[in-house]
Image 1 (cartoon, helix red, strand yellow):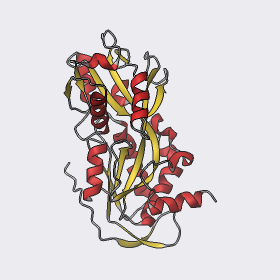
Image 2 (image 1 turned 180 degrees about the vertical axis):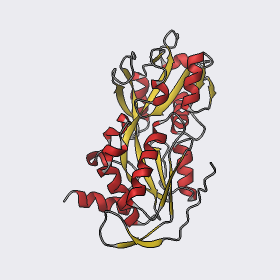
Image 3 (image 1 turned 45 degrees about the vertical axis):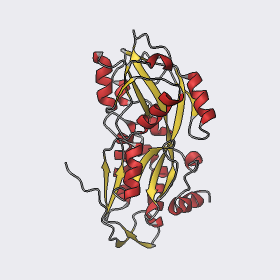
Length: 299
C-alpha cells in the first residue's frame, strides 16, 4: 500500500488524551520510521505507533517499513518522518532531531549453519554474507567491522528474513544482524544455526569508538539449541524531529515509558525499556518535550 510520508504540518488545536487540560497543536499525521521485515524495529515500531495513536485521537499515526537506522535518520532530516527508531552508532550529528529516549539494545549476531567452518570473524573472509538491508544499522556497523578488522567478503544486502532463508538453503555462508533479541529471522532457524563468537572484536570496537559499543553476552535461553554468545550491544533510541511540538513529544514519551507492557507484548527484547535508562541517549540531546516528561516522572 502506498503511503504518503509527507507530514501534514497544519495542526488542529485539541486536548491530548490522558494529558493535562493544556490545549496544543497536534499534527494531522505522524509518521514513525521503523525497520525491515524480520527485524525487531518493525514489530516494536508498529506496537508503539498503535499505542501513541490512542493517546492522540486526532492524529493519524503511521508506522512505515524502512531499511532501519540509516534510512530512518535521512527520513527524519528530510521531514518525511517525525518519529524514528535508530541505533546509536550511525549518529554523528543530531541535526534537526532530538531523542525521545533510549529504548532497548540491539546485539550484533552472526548466524552460520551448525556445520559451518566459520568460527571467528576473520573466517568470514571470502565468504558469502548478508550485511542486512541497504540503509540499515546492520549495514553501517557490519561495514565498519569489515574495515576495522581488514576482512574482505562477498557481501550482499537484504532483509534479515531473506538472509535467514538463504542461510537455511545454503546460498549464504553467514548473516549479520544488529537487532534486538530474540530476532524473529534467527528464531526461525532454530536447530539449524549457531552464533559466531566475537569477543575480541567487541572489545576493540568499544576501545576504538567510544560510546556506542558495549561488550555483551546473548544468553543461551535466547534461541532454542543455541549456546550463549559473546558479542556487543548498541543502544537504540526513539528520535523525534526537533521541530515537533514539545506537547506532542511529551505525550509520546509518556506513552513509551508508561505503556511499556503493551508495547513489549510478544516482543521480549523490548522489555528492557525503562525510565532509569531512558535518559541515557549518548550524544543526542533529549527533546524538550521528553525532558519535560522525565522531570515530571521524578516527582
